[in-house]
Length: 407
Image (cartoon, rainbow, N blue to C red; front, side, top):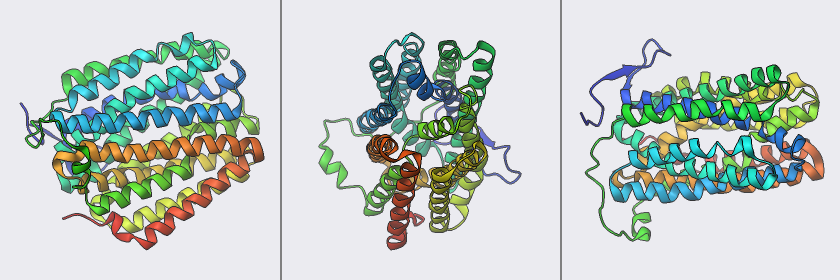
């Protein structure tokens, strides 16, 4: 049965008075949970694997992370636009998840930094293919009154997987005597498990607004409203301030934490992100978005400053917790703003542009962060992030209509 809201509505168990959200949104969250777990098991230890086992430099780690995210983002805009033109989103979402799952077979077999780079980029191509159509599909099936809650639920489930992944990696590293490749092999299990959930469980409504023709992309772009473009710009600046979470891992390792415990910093970050994503998603639907985003940016500034001067594992963990909190405050809000402002037939394109801005900014930020780390250590890296976050806050103060609610 195809319906824009699905035949059954589920209330999220995370809140007593939670609004009803479509069943499909919950299933998309389960898919994200499983793939997030698989990816986090690998990426929670990959930076240390590159440095200690393959002899990579910190600068090269930054370049790998940045190139991977840039690859993701350029793919997202193509897949998002294709989903608008085809009127089908689920086939592209499924293709992306299958590609990411299959490509993860390369990591336990990698013998050089170059192979890891190629595998990381190919894995991110899969993510790029699926993300914009998936977010557009979620927007299509979620009523506007609970759109923030819907994104909050999916992000909460995704980050739960991203939390379980590093914890599993810690246990497996301890039990195996720091056998990186064994962890990579086991990470394949949840990655492949998400495919039948998506294939069988998630249903796609008919997209009657699709345009089945060779479209002129520039004409479509001119249909996107100004608040959407401002939101994309602000998102790009915030991504410049955040760079890759790999640098949280490297900061913890630099302080002197054991390699097996390093993934714990990501586990804590994702724990806070997971706990905060749904409550702040609810607030997106009910309160002042300008205030919420301002608070989120302020928390990011605080996280960067704490991490810049952290000298012990406990202070670094506090910085990681703040990093997760600012993600919970801001990510569902920004996705909701994009979904609210995008014309129905161009939602895939809008999310593709949104993700492109994030990816290009993350590439620049992660590459620069690696260079700053080489020149001035983690202090220079994270202070630079705090400075850019201040710039993002200034843009929001000057253009508060960026996050205005769309009636």
